[in-house]
Every structure is written in structure tokens, then in C-alpha cells.
Length: 303
Image 1 (cartoon, rainbow, N blue to C red):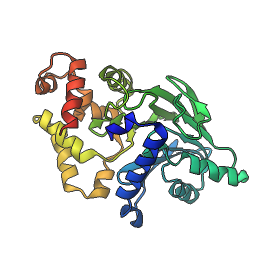
Image 2: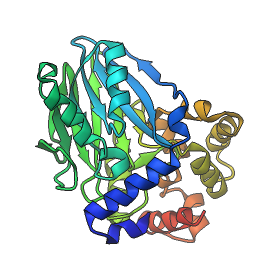
Image 3: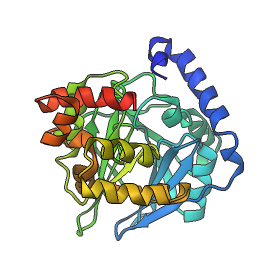
């Protein structure tokens, strides 16, 4: 996959689309269960896609206005939106990779064909590689989903224009962050287009600064591999060991159910958010958090 970054964008997107279509062909014939987190102010529905992707439908409970995050399978998204009786008019793109943004054009075309659905607003980073983009966003830009407040976090590294979306709603302080391929449960994305400094800023400077109870909705189900790596790095970390045991005992649906994580949990188990810890630094033989971030990612790439 890393070689794709050296190819022209249109060609790399086509090859990526082919890869994910072939690898997920057998899965497309199976029912894939959605999982919903219902809060007072918002409802988040996790919709599995392709081989191991997640799409998310975010609904403001007060207004029934809704947004979708990374709808690579538009037909499935529209099916779930109809089931929930919400009004879907916003699309949030975390980054340009086909398995996240590859459904944008098809979903936009559906809205062009159904004028009664209203206009579809497409948010994403300042990047011409994102299809259908109508609203370019950057660090601390804000918008609303009904009565929910959304703040954009610029997290370049996996791609140059990667954006995470931090959503708050209600007087109870309910919050969620949609992290695409920057932060996974117990892991982080590869440094395809960026640097260790950028990932350090994303994970430590921005995402770690969010309240600990913020729910983390990531772009892929990679829990088992990430936790195995984390356990190798920190074999004495009881939180990692306990979650790894849960992941090893679970089937695919059970592992999917481990998402959402929380920012607080990630600070306890995610070695990429623990680069200040002596044990993590010792594993890669480095003495500073930034050096540790770089060496840790290199180690994970070979794991």
C-alpha cells in the first residue's frame, strides 16, 4: 500500500478500489451488523464496510439531522439512515484514501437525482484528491449537525490533509471524536505522507488533550493486531493485557464491539500515546518521545 503514494492519484485510487473490492467480496454477501451508541444528545451508529472499515452515522436526537463519516458504501449508509428516520445532509471525510472517500461521488450523485432530499454538504481537508468536496476545513473550524457542535482537528501524517472530527452535544458533556486513520484502538495510522513530528502533534498535542471520556470512533477494526503489539512493547501493562484477552476471546463482531474506545483508555493502552513512558522508550532504545514515536512506528510496520 505504501507504494501507492508514488503513483498518480487517479491511478492509485483505482488500484486501491480494486484491492478492497476483491478482498471484501466474500464479506459483501454476509449480513454485517450495525452497532449503535445512544446518548441523550446524539446517536452514533457504527456501520461495518469493506473488509475492516467503519462508517458512522451521527444523528442529533433533538432535530434528527444527521451526518455520515467516510461513507465508502453509500447504499448501506442510505439504508441505515432510512431505518433510523433521520435527515442526512452532511458528509464528513477524514482523508482522501479510497476506502474512506471512495463513496463520496456516488452518494453525491444520489442527492443530485433526488432533489427532495436536499443538498449534501461534503466536509474534508484542503485536498483536491477528496471527491465531491464542498467545504474545506482545517484546525479549529466549526460547524453543526443539528444542535451538535463539531470542531475540526487537523491531523496530517497518514495523509497531508487528514482531519478528525470532535463532536459535542447536550448539557451532559457528551462527546465523540471520529479519528479515521490517525488514531485506532491501541494503534495509529502509518506515516504515509507525513512525519513522526506530525503524528506526535496529532496524538499527544491534540487528541490526548480531549477529555478522557471522549468516545473514540476509528476508521478500521485492527484491535487484535494492535493489542498484541502493545502487549509486546509493555508486557506489564495490566490494562493492555486485559483488553487483549477480551479481543482474543471474541469473534469478529465481538472485536468490532470494542469500538468505541475512549481517550482515557487510549492513554492507558495505546503505546503511540505513551511515548513518554520509560518502558515504551526502552523497547525501541530511544530517549525522547519524538524519537520513540518514529522508532515505534517502524517496529509496528514490521510486526
